[in-house]
Amino acid sequence: MSGAAASGEGPVWEVFVQEKAGDPHKHAGSVHAHDAEMALQHARDVYARRGQVASMWVVPHAAISASMPADNASFFDPADDKIYRLPAHYLSPASDRRR
Image (cartoon, rainbow, N blue to C red; front, side):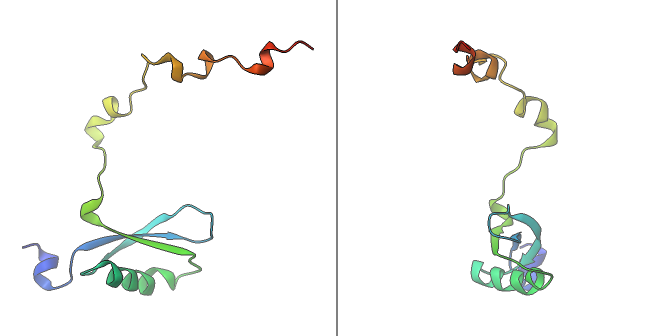
């Protein structure tokens, strides 16, 4: 049993907040809670009191997957064998027009 689960705090939830409608959600921090509703309440109490919040997400930490720094070269390597993805592969309709 993990330390958080043994102490009764519950699993870790990552908190993302949106300050204004239309803005991207940004990671604000983490809270411990037993379910999503409780995580939202804790997140509201901790992160919404600092300023205006339009929306808030809570995500179980265990549900987040990330790339590993050791894999960056191959994971983010451009697809050089797929020239159709390059903008130079296509002709613009404007380039075909005569003035």
